[in-house]
Image (tube, rainbow, N blue to C red):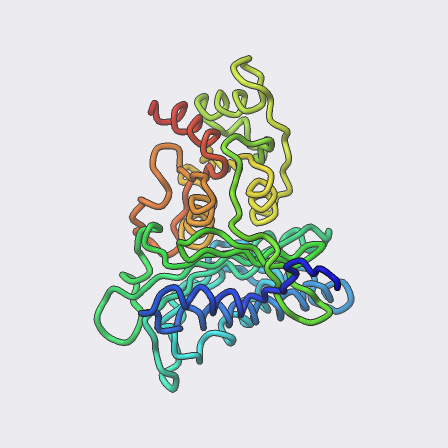
Length: 336
């Protein structure tokens, strides 16, 4: 008789159902949001895969609320997510990095108790050169009365997120998410169109191998930031040098560092004194993920998840990754 080992295939749907069973009071609404996001990411993955074959590469000729040129796929990905999630009765509002105001749920649809904030296609300026791009998302629970989501609902500390995740569209498509019970990764099997559990209970090493930072801004950094980056690169003789790996796509850099250990840094500079990355759409969700994986995230003086947002498109300096490496940033920038 053949001795079969445990080779059971765990789809994302099966995994979510099994996780939900651990919480008898769960209503299934959050699970439904995750199903919808998985579907949307499959649709976006298909568009990204075909980007070189159809006319959806390059700039659209418009700007988003950040004043940045919108890429065609940015707009397509944004529309896919909105249309995949606006009718399920689980959300009361959405917000996108690509849109200035809150995205309301149409009145003809039932509204739920959750809010979705997302960056539909992070790193989209790299699409034309075939660099991995990604989707980042954050889920909050409504805190105000009434059926519609409000700005107050959106402007909650990152520590109050109930779920967060990202999808990386690269050599393979992978969805990574947390609901506060560890971090789990699923790889899309294109032959069956299913996300399969490939990276259960992901953990980031305490010390990292990789430093991800755009050194072209060095002349615009403060002396403290320059000293910090020199420390990471081993130039002050106080630690071994980290390997510099910078793709320029936040999801790609973060994903590599989550698996191998390391630190992603996007410091403030004299031209962007408040930082560049968006607190609600990028910093908070990835900070939630990295903390659940054993890492940390700071703006240089505060834990990212403790920051009380004041604006929908607020920016922040960002240091995220292995706990011991982030601690160095806190020590050198805040004197902690």
